[in-house]
Image 1 (cartoon, helix red, strand yellow):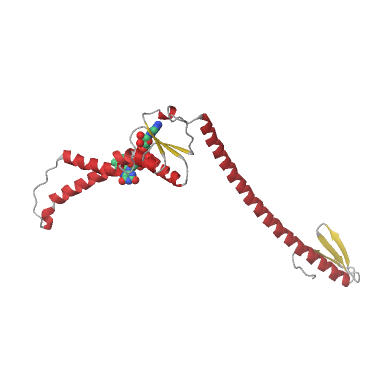
Image 2: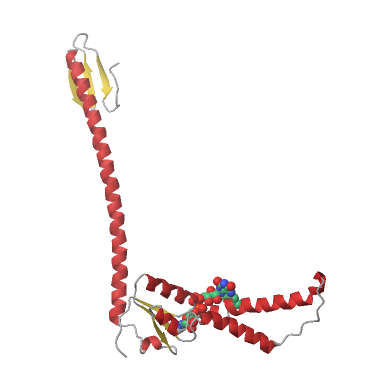
Length: 218
Ligand SMILES: Cc1cc2nc3c(=O)[nH]c(=O)nc-3n(C[C@H](O)[C@H](O)[C@H](O)COP(=O)(O)OP(=O)(O)OC[C@H]3O[C@@H](n4cnc5c(N)ncnc54)[C@H](O)[C@@H]3O)c2cc1C
């Protein structure tokens, strides 16, 4: 068999595998679907489909048995299990016919059927493919970390802009206060973030915390 490369190899063509494969094909991926037993898995063969068909059979028997309540006279139903089985098989086939290997291939996926171990035989996943999958996964992980860092950088930059704006406003207030004080002939001394203003006239001094935005001289 010729060597094939796939974007996605799905192991197991149960309800889950079938949905995943169909979806991936629609997205344009080259897909291999590998099934060791029967396409459809539990849902088609032993779960959802036959159980719902069996429930229908039980409901019909119940209605026949209780029909007289509604004025319908009937005889006690006789269950022919062979016929019931035929009905169940038909219900299963009705569902299965949409997922035969031919149908699935028509939908655009490659289907590999066979005993367990098929993946180490004709449809083996090569070391190269595994490594490629790991590299792709790591790349996606790194990409998502890069996006997160970028998001944090933008927040940081926005904060910096805000801090700069606040700083400029405070700077303006300080300059304004200094100018006002100079006009009044006061001595202005900068001291560890605080401004000491001394009145030359009576040499009384007072402190003004310049960090308090919009503060005015007492
Ligand atoms: C009685 C009953 C009634 C249910 N009714 C409902 C219902 O009404 N609605 C509902 O949503 N669900 C229902 N479920 C549940 C439903 O059947 C499961 O959820 C569904 O089958 C799970 O699908 P799956 O693809 O995950 O697994 P499975 O159906 O188990 O499919 C797995 C497939 O992988 C294959 N496989 C496994 N190993 C390998 C391997 N190494 N290589 C290749 N192939 C492999 C198997 O052969 C199988 O075909 C019911 C289940 C039961 C038992």
